[in-house]
Amino acid sequence: MMLPTLRIAVVAFSLAAASCGHAAQPISARFAADPSPHYFQTGSDGRFYVYATDDASNSGKYWDSTSWRVYTSKDLQSWSDAGIPLSVTVFKWARPDAKAWAPEAAYRNGKYYFYAPVGGDKIGVAVSSRPDGGFTDARGDALVDKARDANAGDEPIDPAVFVDKDGQAYMYFGTRVPKVVKLAPDMVHLAGAIQNVVVQGWPESDPKKRYGEAPFLHEHNGVYYFTFSTGWPGQIVYATGGSPLGPFTYRGVVIDYLKISTNHQAILEHDGEAYVFYHDQLLPGGGSMRRSITYAPLKYGPGGTIGQVQLEPAQVGRPGQ
Ligand code: FUB
Image (cartoon, rainbow, N blue to C red):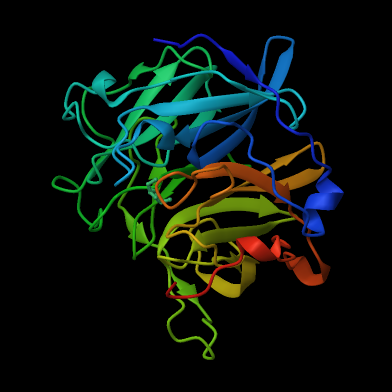
């Protein structure tokens, strides 16, 4: 059920200022994390949607919330809390207390799809005719199930969906070993085997740098960019390749270590501008379990490089912190 919409006045901040290292502003006064940003057009109404893990309803000791949250904006500056788009209880096969982690959404076939990591070992998929709620279980069982599916990995979480120009959809997910699987045209079935994503060319100067979590794939000027977090704590780094299936070659850092245990990004391109959404401890009382979502402009450089986001000095953490 949708909660009443709460309109939150958020301090507007200039994207140019954000890129120069000025204070990042949270999109909501409510704790939220793991942003999945989208721009959806419903009839004549186009707006941004950010689907999120709800850190405001967890115990404060672990990420044990059981519902997700969605925020909307017309202009990326003034945001509304549109409430709960989905709870784990919608999935009858899930324990009602199963934790609801980093979500993903997609639009296709005139419907909205919600990819929902449930309990750390399964990914469910729900469908709705609108983007802000009304989601129902699209299958009656999990889309990915660690106990059922070969090569699902130790922790099938953090789904991210990419639809290529030829219409083929891919879902990335996983902790410690990144996974990719093709989705069927109906978006609610797997089409083929789950494969490991290969990232090569890691910097020898930093042997500890490896894939951790938060896989994300986007395409820009014909280059496929695979971004992810290197761990706990982690940097957001990027690797590039010539196909959504990889292999990808390590290129550099997008977001440095934060002072919280997780780093989780997603990239949105709209009207010729690119943005990277991430979470940090930006609100009073914030921390590793009480995160908040913000974003910064994403700038491309020569040769398809991505410029590193200039964080406020107070945001920057250290490896192993
Ligand atoms: O929010 C719970 C977990 O924290 C997510 O699944 C990870 O990506 C990390 O951000």
